[in-house]
Image (cartoon, one colour):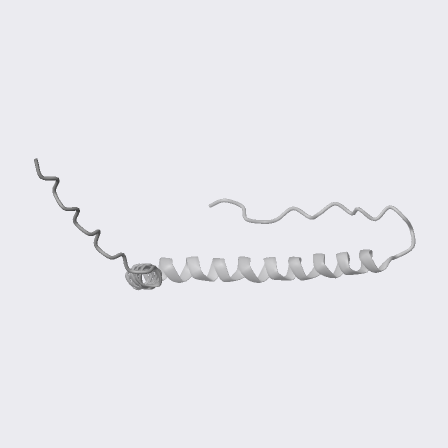
Length: 97
């Protein structure tokens, strides 16, 4: 399995005084780190659950795929109905010889 850990961002604050930008950047890094930990934990739990019950996981995956395909089909039909209907071209009278 591949490593999904993100590398920490380099610290770009060069001055010694904490500025508002540095404060926001620090909070953003902390939030990103916490989110990464939660996503990694959820992914690990999902993998373990799929290993424990592979048939259920396959059924869920098939259901999700069917739902996405149905939604895509519905969107395609809705977009078709937004286009104005074309009238059939009038037939030109044949030139008489």
